[in-house]
Image 1 (cartoon, rainbow, N blue to C red):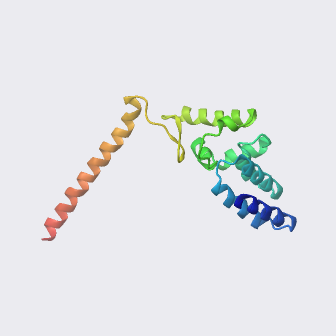
Image 2: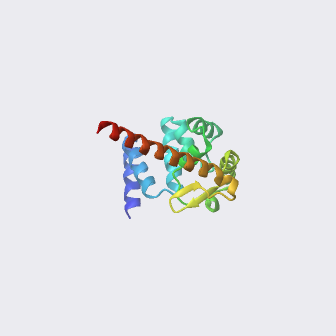
Image 3: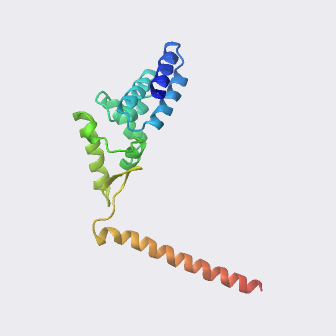
Length: 168
């Protein structure tokens, strides 16, 4: 009920020429329903109407009607593959609900992320995340960073103890 009520307000705003409130209402709805492809399509159409090509590409990325120019603008705005995937603000993996063009586009983005490595994309209840390492070699980098962090903490503690002793 609330969704339809807000969409009716969006339509009323647009009939009156009030684009900014309509954008805000759609953004709020999209935050409440992040996996709703119809809302994304409406949001992309609204950004197209006002000439914001990059945002039209962002919200139309998972739709069939996004132009190559819009997708290219979106990719320029978010140059890293992980940035683009996170910018889509999806929670659940939409692959099974996408058309052939959008499905191929998302698959290409996921392949880019996996090529950049070291982890694959894993869809969790909070959205896409880097998957767990599949081998000890992939986990080696994490272990090295953790070890360096522990050494830095230990050196900081020794330094603090030394400063406190000097002060006494």
